Image (cartoon, rainbow, N blue to C red; front, side):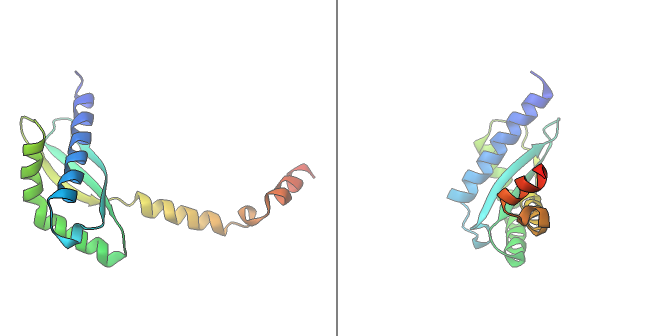
Length: 128
């Protein structure tokens, strides 16, 4: 079994476990509107980065960040109980900026004059 396959499987198991634990066990209101989007685990399975998004504004993101700091040891303990790993990796929580980046790209594309034209006008412009 390759280490990449093992780390990918561990990452998916950790992502699913964290999402379940937050949904079912964590009572912190800072994590109410959090979605776990991804997890990356080092090849040696010693470190895990768990990525999340949060519904709301900058204040909601900061509240989620503080809530993850408060719940970090609890979540690591629960991950160890949920997943059969030789040792539980150190878990770091990071805000996933990919959604913000995608929204920014959408805004930029929506502002381009070429994309504002009617589809029939675009076709006529390309033909003529």
